[in-house]
Image (cartoon, rainbow, N blue to C red; front, side, top):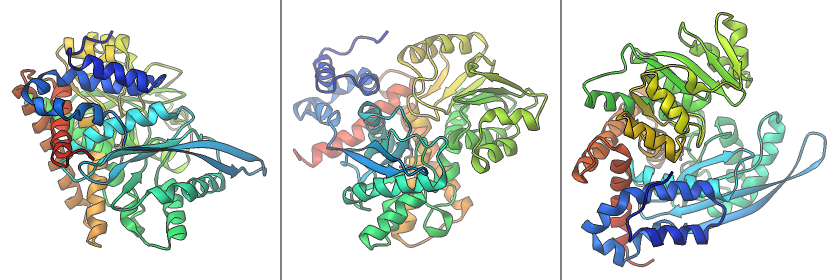
Length: 449
Ligand code: GLU
């Protein structure tokens, strides 16, 4: 169950509930942040006077529109799309687009809200936003994806711009979709505005290491958490949920650090390979063939596929939830603890439920919340914007080094802020407070706008 909020924060939360009915994920994300902010208000009464928290919980602009498109059979289709431009105190709105049937305003708002604080933690000049559609890319042909993206951009383009709002990918939106979206933006506006999108192809303004960045960054964050406990990933058994972009590169970097990945998953089931998951196979299945993870056992018959299996039932020392929101609940967390897990870092956004977080923290496990642990993706997006602004293109090594330094800094900021506010080792408090202070100070400086 959720814990009690500070008495000054309770009415603010109640107001969020009243103003945003039925948006459970948004409520959850806000509650988790407000739980951390009690001590901040006592230290900074000016934030209360200026209603910074209330303003942070209210998106600056919310766009909802219809996307009509035609499928390969010539049938008319209708989807709903969103862009929530949440907060621009630190820079242009920045955050991905998600294509998934579960997308509705509450999901986009929770993601946008998280994004504001996450982007602040990167230390780079980006505000927060998020968007997407209830369009389901699963089973769609390339031409259907293209027509959908073109139709979506035909409305969305008017709200974007390198100084205004800069989308990228998220679940269901990768290099292919960004290509179609950017192409249509370029055509409609008659501008080659590279910095209006990130996650672009390497031949047309994309950044090296962007594809790898979220997963790599999550693993850098775990390594820092373990280092703070005089430990490391070397020799650890690791379980990663998901098998998309974040999961694949989290597995790759964890393996580089000497960990053994024994399981991964997709929405159909889980694959357990005690010899260590073979990444080349996962990449082929997911990035090239776009098939289900079940296909893994065709190439590795010794591995086990469990249809509908629970990934957190596989024993591990390090768990990396890299699939989607609320995929790790209280029971899963208790099982992880029981089976000897020492660290959990979130590659996905809000993958652990409120109860799950409580169980992990009570057990004293190193727990890295998504807004800190998965910030490497958007941080590298900001590096892509830097390269676009200077019409430059950096090497993989240099870009990855920048990403690594950013993750080390995020870890340090969260760690030190948690100590300063009397909660040593509590990265969730450290991340929420550090991110909030950055955005809050900027909003305060700019007056009531
Ligand atoms: N969707 C990613 C995230 O959750 C990346 C956003 C971006 O690069 O703008 O942070």
